[in-house]
Length: 120
Image 1: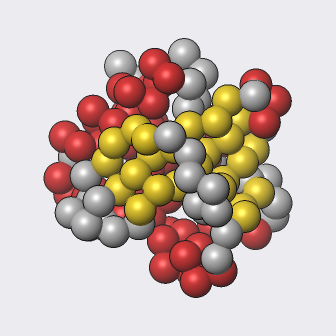
Image 2: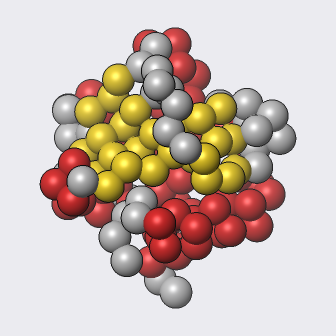
């Protein structure tokens, strides 16, 4: 499985929704698109007001985080924080600056849940 492909995404959604302590971090974030540009993978995930997540179709204008597979792997392994990776352009972000400021650190929780997936 590759990060954000359909099989990985479905496992991640299950894992995230089982981790109630993580929900508050992205509660109300709405739809976010993740891309793995060197593999032409794009997935959209939607966080509701309770922080539960489901896979959805990408929405035009939704915040987009995009990077090569190796950079996503670096984040998932916890080698760098999400904010650091965006600031260094290892992960490219397109969307409202206020969104990035509000939820930026929450993506370390996304990486933590993804890291647990990789261990299984």
